[in-house]
Length: 130
Image 1: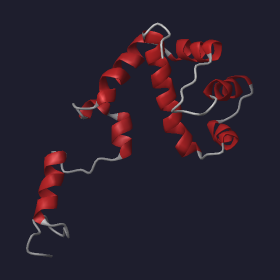
Image 2 (image 1 turned 120 degrees about the horizontal axis):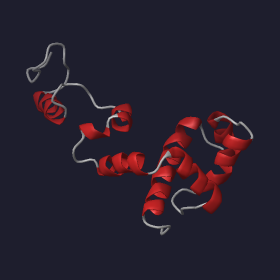
Image 3 (image 1 turned 60 degrees about the vertical axis):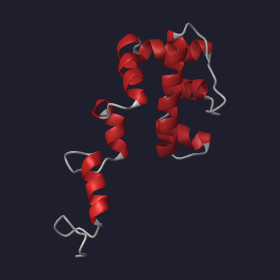
């Protein structure tokens, strides 16, 4: 289209196309799903190490048991995740139902739950210190 256009059918100026190509060698745009499911693809990701070590050292059952017994809370995540987990396990509530209890959508709750589990895992590895 424009004189700066480098790719077929692209409306982006040449400098933006070059940035896209430099940021992702295969030419595909990165999505949030890419970040969640393939952390190893980004070598500079701070969560890459913690995600890999979290999964290897502490299993889901240990994590859930710790949450239910210790009931850790964090100021930056003002939700009662231990209560949510109890409702999930003991009452058979779905995460969608739990998100309604929290007053947010399930797509908003999911990353907060993931972050909470990461923080609890770190706490467990650090010997219970927050």
